[in-house]
Amino acid sequence: MEDKLYQSIINVKVGKRTKLWRYVNLYGCTIGDDCMIGTYVEIQSGVTVGNKVRIQSHTFVCEGVTIEDNVFIGHGVMFINDKYPRACGDWKLLKTVIKKGASIGSNATILGGITIGEGALVGAGSVVTKDVPAYTVVAGNPAKFLKTIHI
Amino acid sequence: MEDKLYQSIINVKVGKRTKLWRYVNLYGCTIGDDCMIGTYVEIQSGVTVGNKVRIQSHTFVCEGVTIEDNVFIGHGVMFINDKYPRACGDWKLLKTVIKKGASIGSNATILGGITIGEGALVGAGSVVTKDVPAYTVVAGNPAKFLKTIHI
Amino acid sequence: MEDKLYQSIINVKVGKRTKLWRYVNLYGCTIGDDCMIGTYVEIQSGVTVGNKVRIQSHTFVCEGVTIEDNVFIGHGVMFINDKYPRACGDWKLLKTVIKKGASIGSNATILGGITIGEGALVGAGSVVTKDVPAYTVVAGNPAKFLKTIHI
Image: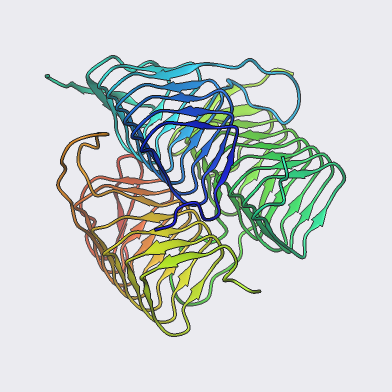
């Protein structure tokens, strides 16, 4: 499959063996080695994506987000970087970090200023409103603690 | 950035200084001045969008929706215009109005026939099943009253 | 409207009178007669879609999903086929079936290994974590029984 079809990639640093699917819209971001970025994914300026990360289709990663190595981001996940969005006026950029080995289920919504801990798992369709500790599973709207992952 | 790349725009009236991002799919709608329409946004026939409106990436605005001035629509927001969707058969178009200055968080779902009041704020990931009064904050699935915004 | 613009269609069997919108990303799947596949829809390899099915914009249908005749899938619906997604390692493909005449509301999330019964209705924004019996309405996160549909 010739994947460059319909891609929009501007000022992006892409690592080795990383696969970008069709219709991606990437600008001003850095993506590591051995990643997979799915169809209809937008990644904004200043985002850093580590190595061996999978970001699935229909997901939006905003400015202010850092994604560490071995993270899985499902389909239709929306990141947020402002507290009270308005059409006009100033706003403060909130920073979010997804620590190494964490997984975020499809259609999840991640509010701004959140840290999702190492190896944590966010259930599909969750709305994450506060930090998620390492190696825990959360789910729901708002997302609540479900269990600890024993490693 | 040359933004016309990959755009599909058919029979659309677009105001002054309005910025349309790549991969938009717009047809038969009217968009005011000083708006921003994000990547992968579809806006259907008959929709009217006011001035200074921001509609973020991955959002779908269906026939029957009116968006007034200074509204903010987040990423991945889905509007609905039928009560019981079915693959076949007739259906009645429900009309939705987003009043001026309102904001809708990312991944929110707005059922058909809803009015979201002036300056109201819908939390990210909410499912809005009834009208939202002016200057109130709602959130959750289904969305419930959280607080009044003092202006 | 000339709909072939910007489409990516690889090894897909498409039935008669089926309409594919712009920006679809379809590969290795089979789609029946008289269907409508909306903008920004991705359908993966091995998926079978019956006749008279509507799949609305921004929806992702993964490998392992079977969609029977007369089904309605709303906008921004995400299907899932793994239990614990991780960036690396093996995983088991879970199979999901949407039975004939069922409807799934916009922004719903359907976990892997689910059967949605004949004529059932999944409310918009729901997260479906277990089977849905035929001719029932479910909604919420997680989706719960609301009522029986009398036919």
